Length: 344
Image 1 (spheres, rainbow, N blue to C red):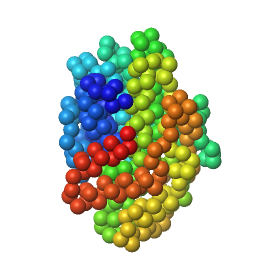
Image 2 (image 1 turned 180 degrees about the vertical axis):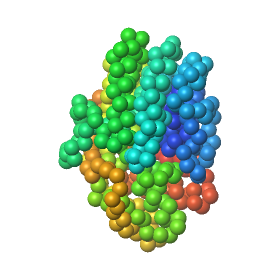
Image 3 (image 1 turned 30 degrees about the horizontal axis):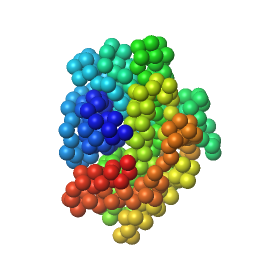
């Protein structure tokens, strides 16, 4: 893959977010020509501003269609990876209208700009495992299950996925543009400073030498290191660029052994952090969040002969490694370069 992406023109929306920053780092290391389109980083501190990147960064709102269209026309990307979103469930209860505007109309805008472009050959929309109608099953959801997210975030991502499929059926196939959606689960890794996510909550508690407070210790989620889905995103974009038969909808998640409860995940963090770090159950009457959520990833494993490389313990270990380097004011860029080389 590294040689494929060298000198390729790649547009990333949401490049200043957690996953977008890691993706930008990978592609920059591989010699791609990158343009990013995103709001300013969502937190302070944030991963993006810690990185040494050669990237054309456009700080703009995905809801601004005219600017987005202008950037695509000028940059003429061959590959577009769409990750710009309002990404938090609890935030979507507070600001549902903004969540829908960003996640739904943002998708319409990127699809419409691609439809008007003569350069784009490969388009990937990154949605979420929460797009499915969640029936709290103990088995994983497959790509042909109904899309009907419960909360405004999940539902807006269901809409985003369906919009992409509609544009693909109505326009992209005829235009020769390969198009896929990737439905990924919860990711962890160094540099996530978001609110209302378990690993950043662990990091903040460790820094303050306080017990970690957990809202839903018994909820089961598919956790994976951030490099796992990013590798698949890049694989999908490359394969469908070379052959349209790889266009489609793909679940991207870990093996069953890595679908653990939030409490178990926190136990692992405490184990690798040390310093007698612990956690307390802080259950609250907050908004609805799924208790059980798992994906069936048979399709992507069979299509690309893929399997996870870093399981949950190693993912936590790598996250703690990055975080301690950051707290000690050492070189996080070198740490990320080393982790990327090791992973790929």
